[in-house]
Length: 127
Image 1 (spheres, rainbow, N blue to C red):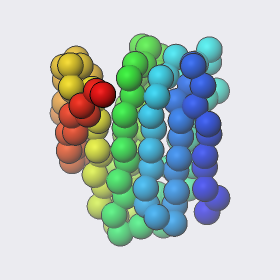
Image 2 (image 1 turned 60 degrees about the vertical axis):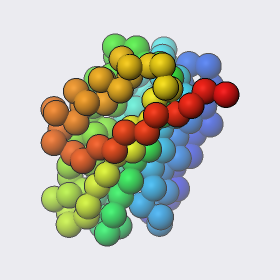
Image 3 (image 1 turned 135 degrees about the vertical axis):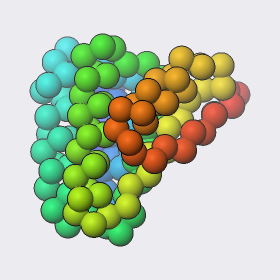
Image 4 (image 1 turned 180 degrees about the vertical axis):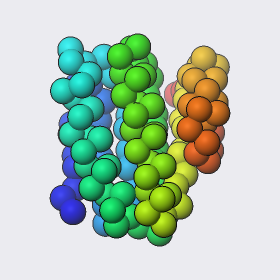
């Protein structure tokens, strides 16, 4: 499978989906002009990956901010990870947030409740 890597901008997050390693990353800011256009290739990649996933897949999410339309697609990304579990793989979400951003931590908890995926929370100390 092809490695999916998209450099982040002021509006869109950095994406690094590495099928060979089973490591996925989404970080930065997510306020793209067209959330569907940005996230659809990620969802398609995940559908393909779910057909033959690694034994363990880890998604690292470290978003400083995302808008409402992005939140819908982030949830879709998480739901696609459930397909990985159906394909026989284990999934863990590393939800990272800045130490003073309790709202982002709670958002992760909400996603965990909705998806049933295993989340680990990582508070990042600001320098």
